[in-house]
Image 1 (cartoon, helix red, strand yellow):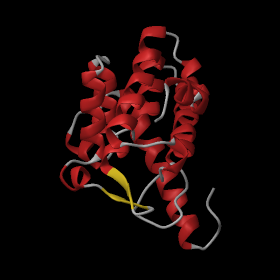
Image 2 (spheres, rainbow, N blue to C red):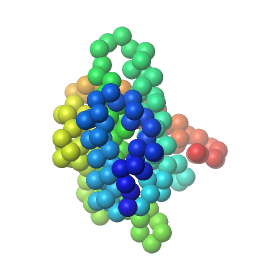
Image 3 (spheres, rainbow, N blue to C red):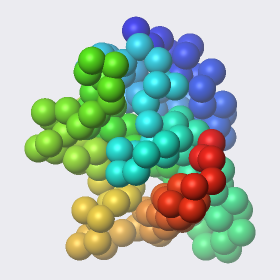
Length: 179
């Protein structure tokens, strides 16, 4: 099983969260999702099942978190950077429930056929006691959020996520290797 130290080693960006309690809850959500999804290594989970060779979810999450941090550092508005980083780190955590490893292949799980990762991730975050603002970022980061009034932090995570998705998809279609 995946341990707390594995998550902390994977996501050094956790140190960008100043509030230690919030940081610990982010790790707890990843641990809970890994346990419930019966994952043994975070590095075996793909970024997406929508196209072949999409790369790893861990790498995507790290890229989104770095993009979010860079965007927030260029904005003059008051943003909650701890919530922003926590939301970026957790935006796709629900994929650990949406996907499953079966007969050596990663497929959409029975759970994932009914509940997509934004809802699953938001529920996990709420169970762990994360602030409602972070739960909102997770719930609103994908198409499900298109009917919501996204917070500024949720807008940033949403767009950074789709920047990465569209670039990966475009490069993959052209046949270039995806890392």
